[in-house]
Image (cartoon, rainbow over all chains, first blue to last red; front, top):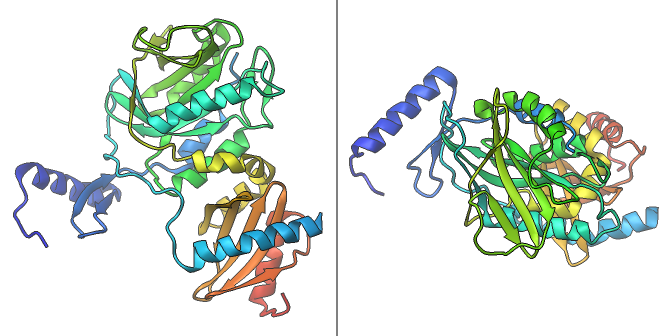
Length: 60
Length: 315
């Protein structure tokens, strides 16, 4: 296991991820191999995607 | 028909056991992708994975060789929207049940909606990015009719900006050309962007990078997806825990629907192939075949759930 300190970029990303998790329930991604921080995900709802698909206009 | 169904089910039974009971990974795994940004600039380029690019050209060529080859054809593009570009990671075909002719194409939206649910169970960051469709002549630019619909539609996309490609069959060089033009084996795809409020499409440089088409495993079972799109869509809305998987062997591919039951290790599994369904009740490592009591797929799910809730053991 790597216990090295986070660098500045990693620290900013982690703080941003934690803030996003608290403020808007954004997921925090974890590397399944070593449980390290792997970034954030801004998940899109099925409704948003399906609404866009079902309203695709006819093309000519 | 029933004998055929039993035969299909038995053939896929071994695949099911190998796939589900031994915990093998799904045929498709979501790639590691960067997080979506919260604000977007105007799209400056579109990035296709190599398999997405190959899928578009190969299926376009196959379409032209088919009985309906004179018709227009198309695909929905799903992927990840970055700040100033988008990465296309999945293609959803127009489907055999599309409405199309030599001058129009309207996709089978219900099948594409269901397919988007299936693909997005592997990665919820995938969004709608745009549309590819073909022109039978040599018009490499979206038509006025396309603009009329697309300009009203792009407002609901991330950043209010959409990606549109026009496919044509022209004898042009496979090398060189403007950065928004792709060519392969005599077929051409021209890529454009259209942002909400724009008065015309703009050429969009296209790049290809390594990667898969996340929806490609669904293409061999697209007829099945179309056949069962409506009942499965209803079930997806009503049953949050439903999952899908594509299994295949030498005899072909099938779409498997899984609905977890309350009992640990128990699930209802439906193997869908072409227009037929085979039903299984999984209990731990055992799979029991079930005879459906009605034809309607979603109604049969609830009849079986009612039987199981009542403690029925005669399946």
